[in-house]
Length: 220
Image (cartoon, rainbow, N blue to C red):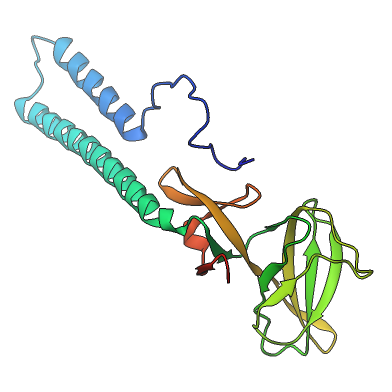
């Protein structure tokens, strides 16, 4: 089940009026103040025409700024939708990103480590969805992909669920670098979240499309 973002197929709920932006609030407040000033000015000492003209000019600037912000917001939304449509071709492919991966109980997970070149030992630390470490695996000092088969040190399969992978680069017994390893995961859906395109991965987790560093066919 997708939990990170709302599914496009979910049941529609009553919508509320959109919240006013700061610019819209300033615009309305300025208009009310200007109207009240003109209405309640002292007839014996009316507002100076040059000052009134200056305030009208400020009002026009605020109004124009509000209109421009609305236009920019609409353009951003349209660009986001266009990006989402373009990335719909990613559905069914495997995306590589620094994110947890779903293990179905049997299918190996491809991990793409990137250890520090100065390290002499590399450890792949596997953690479950609760953040508890469940396994440590020694890897070569290489960026070559590693297939995690989901088996513990006794050869028994781990339970299906979400697992995260961290690479520890070690030199002379000291940890030089701890970095989240990138993994490949199947893309099942693309969605919009605000102005960002979000990819829904197998297992229901979500990542930003901008965090993807590689794509490959799911039958690779």
